[in-house]
Amino acid sequence: MGYLKIDHVDKRFQRGAATTEVLKDISLVIDKGEFVSIIGHSGCGKSTLLNIVAGLTPATTGGILLEGKEVNAPGPDRAVVFQNHSLLPWLTVYDNVALAVNKVFGGVKSRAERHDWIMHNLDLVQMGHAKDKRPAEISGGMKQRVGIARGLAMEPKILLLDEPFGALDALTRAHLQDSVMQIHAALGNTMIMITHDVDEAVLLSDRIVMMTNGPSARIGEVLDVHLARPRKRLELVTDRTYIAAREAVLKFLYERHRFVEAA
Amino acid sequence: MGQPVLKGTTAGATLVSLSGKQPEVVPLPAAPSKPLLAKLLPWGRSALVNLLPPLITVALILLFWQLAAHGPQSSLPPPTKIWEEAKDLITEPFYWAGSQDIGLGWRILVSLQRVAIGFSLAAVVGVLLGALVGQSVWAMRGLDPVFQVLRTVPPLAWLPLSLAAFRDSQPSAIFVIFITAIWPIIINTAVGIRNIPQDYRNVAQVLRLNQIEFFYKIMVPSAAPYIFTGLRIGVGLSWLAIVAAEMLTGGVGIGFFIWDAWNSSRLSDIIVALVYIGVVGFLLDRLVALIGHVVTRGTATN
Image (tube, rainbow over all chains, first blue to last red):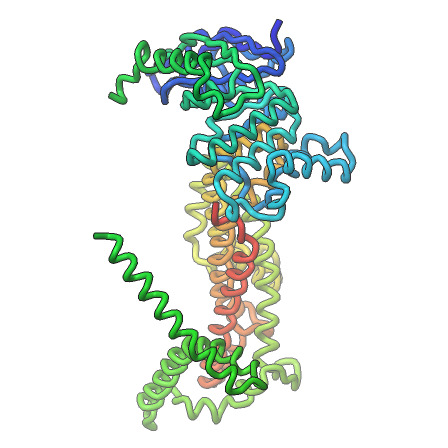
């Protein structure tokens, strides 16, 4: 049946008389606990797709089903980790997570329970030590960790990651990828991640959804990544399945659906 | 090429900071019993650097004024004559010798109280209206043209109307302050709210914050730097308007004092009052700026 179902989603933007079709007939079924990456060249509408799943952008036709029920407005059951972290700069790290926790669990958990839950999630991303710092006082990677903690703290049914590591340097990115893998292994969250990094997609995903170039972007191919977990970055470098998966994605992106404007 | 130059500058900078530290280091072993002096020295120096130039300017102005208004046929009094005639006003701001014979400090306080009431009302209403105009496209289309027209009406032009409406000078003066201060607050708040990053709105949507939560958890803190710019302009305008309003409505405010002094040809008193008004206006502006600085500490940097 599937946990999350993206059902025949089309997205068209209307500006005056001109209509731009961004997404065409996107259908995808994601199981509980699955880690799915969506990869494609920039401008192919992958962020639009994520926003539709999040409910931040309405689909023109088609819809999103979560556990068999249609969702068409944003909500904490589909938490988003934004590309630019989107932490509120006037709140401390702790308060940023607390804003989410108090809103989602305000009526369910006691004050002490909420405090423990906030600290638990900050510790999960190794940010407990910086709880009283403001976003301006911590590094980009740390901000993104807090963004992930905020997403996780909502206890979402599905965690949506919108190019979460795109703005980070390669070393920081590797650390965060490892953290996300550990969290996924420990909690078994369902996650959808937008990325344009082939290695990142292969390393983290159970399935990689490859999108064709826009306008009217479709799902070109879906690749299953049959790599045992836990995955170790260094060991995978020489792993045949890894290399084959990487090659498949690269071929899709650079042979069959080369981004013409980038040439 | 770039690197050696950079290195040279860094080395130079280190040298400078070393030599700059030396005066601090030297007095310590020489006078170990007076570490307070060593602490106060840099503070005193910065105070001197910041205070000396304006003091010199003021001294020069006074000197020039003295020379210009020196002659017996001069229509304005020179500083020495002001000191002779209005010494009590300058040295004793808080004397009380009867209902109309009171120090300028008291008068300033009366005016400040009116400004406080009018300005507080303007701040609350202005931020709420600004939030409405900034948030809703239809509210902006409907209200913004009206605001743009009304805000050009000079403060005193409202006074006859408000006197007719309230039939009392006290609420009329407060209304003039209110109507003067509210426009920059509305307009700046609206701009601040229109500039809230989409990211923050997305966060609010994902969390399903309701309108009230969104208002005080996202809108106000995010727009705070703009709101405080508006408040600062507003408090300045209020202080400008109160003097003019009090000249016409009477009472014990500083504005009426000037009018009264003019009617009895006490030019020295007027000049002293002007200095009081200027200093208080400056302090008001600094106060709002300081509050803004404290409140928006985290907001400006991202």
